[in-house]
Length: 48
Image 1 (cartoon, helix red, strand yellow):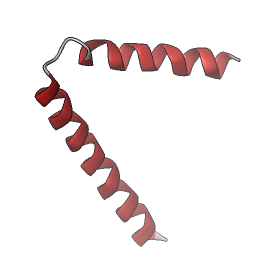
Image 2 (tube, helix red, strand yellow; image 1 turned 180 degrees about the vertical axis):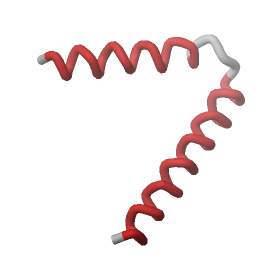
Image 3 (spheres, helix red, strand yellow; image 1 turned 135 degrees about the vertical axis):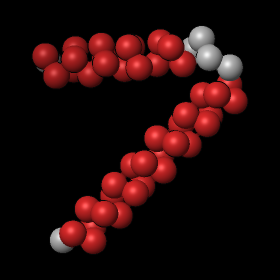
Image 4 (cartoon, helix red, strand yellow; image 1 turned 60 degrees about the horizontal axis):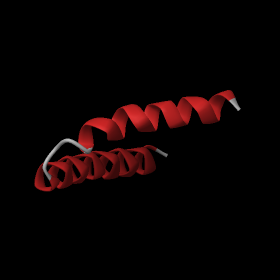
């Protein structure tokens, strides 16, 4: 239950500022984060 509350709090903190940004800025930020996660996943796969 505590994990659920923490996840919802974190989601609210992260998505709160996005609601006030213009859509193109939000999309660019999402693309950067997605690329970063993709690079991380590839590096983790190669490591094993």
